[in-house]
Amino acid sequence: MAAKAMNEGGARGGDEPAVLTAIPTYNAERFLPATLDCLARQTRPPGRIVVIDNGSTDGTEALARGHPTLRIEWRRNESNVGVLGNLNRCLGLATETDYLHLLMADDLVRPTFYERCLPALEGLPAQGFSYVPDDKVNGQGRVVIPAPAPRRRAPRVVRAGEFIRRQSTLETVLLPGVLFRTRRSPVPARFDRFPQLADGVFLAEVAHRGWTVVEVPEVLCEYRLSDMNASSRHRSQVESFVRDEWRAMSLVAGWIPEPAWRRPLTRAWLRLRFAARTEVKRQLFEQGNPGYAAEVDAVRREVAGWWVGALGVAVVRGRDWVRRMAGQPTRREEFASLQGPGGGGGAA
Image 1 (cartoon, helix red, strand yellow):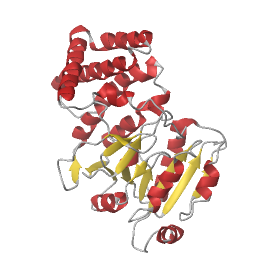
Image 2 (cartoon, helix red, strand yellow):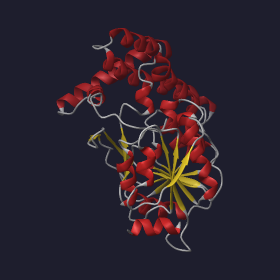
Image 3 (cartoon, helix red, strand yellow):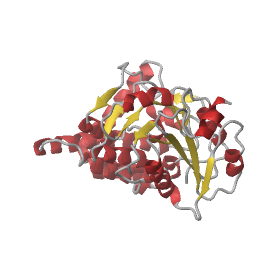
Image 4 (cartoon, one colour):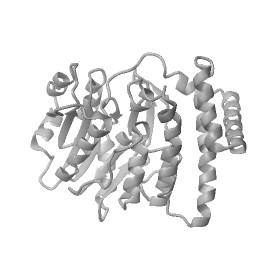
């Protein structure tokens, strides 16, 4: 009952900063209970939990209002504003709190998430955000792609250029593992493009616009890979599944603070990364849908060019060989294992 008492008070003490968790929902009844339960287990719970619903037709509202230990603020959009529109509604709560966390309705944070992230941000002179590594889990909550072991122990401030460069490769920080220190100010970016890549582009833009980035090197987030998240919903569309990746990479790369002479090298490196990512996608479809696999491959050749595209394919095949020798699944096998049952609600 401690979590309920803290939420009813809005904050745990008069001197403690306000922490607000916003959850965008749409037909989220399958996974929402686990998401709410992970908040109830926090060693330092948020003072407010706001669910902004996008027109659910299932039992989402009853689950949110009826949670046994959490006091949930329920808000429902007058009409469905789409996944990005609903994220922006949640983002609008930044001016109501000192710290804002956007938690998707099927993702989880581990019990010490706020306890670890808040101290890492409290000493900043201005606005910023922290992030933690995440494990990828399937519909049953099993870790299928574990986060790499952190190489550091203590939180650190990450230079904007370093962070944006990483985001440009699409090996991105994901939104559920991010805590914003807003100081009751608006966040200087919006979700307005690339639904399946929205996290990476949005966070890169926030860093580009001057907010400090802090890495907290503990795996405190579980990102659910299901057939209802944005990436899965766009998988059958070459335009969004493949071409938008290159558009996003190019956009974010333009924010990297670097001298003009280095930009062609950055772009060549990104073409190689894109070619490798696209080869994994082609492999996913080559048996079940060879025509679609050919479309994906054509985009790889168009964007990367012949020699960079061929090098990207060679990199993937070499990596696959190393993984097989080590008894590990290839990237294609990791993603293929997620295409079984395990879908659920999201934030559309």
